[in-house]
Image (cartoon, rainbow, N blue to C red; front, top):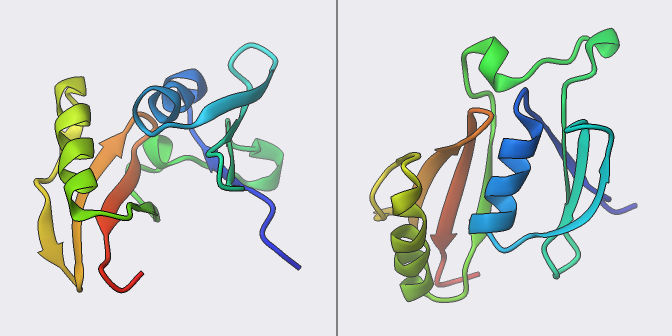
Length: 126
């Protein structure tokens, strides 16, 4: 068995998907409905779905919860790419930490539309 996709629930589906497309290099594979479902790919086999929560299954999103209950992380092959990503994303105005050494990695964190915590980093041993 292998992980097929990751679905991030957001009340601002289009805005969340657009951030991944504009700032993190994902490509659009499919949309359904009016801002109801975006399927994205990263070119390395990762499928990312952005959709609203499924209320009948008790789903929620981190905006309505008012908390971040998880984060997702992306590794870059070179430390300099972390710096470049930080400088490229900084003008977007989202909340970000500065890059720093943390737990054996060089990372920064940001909160993207949908209140989703994202980590971008480089790990020399990865």
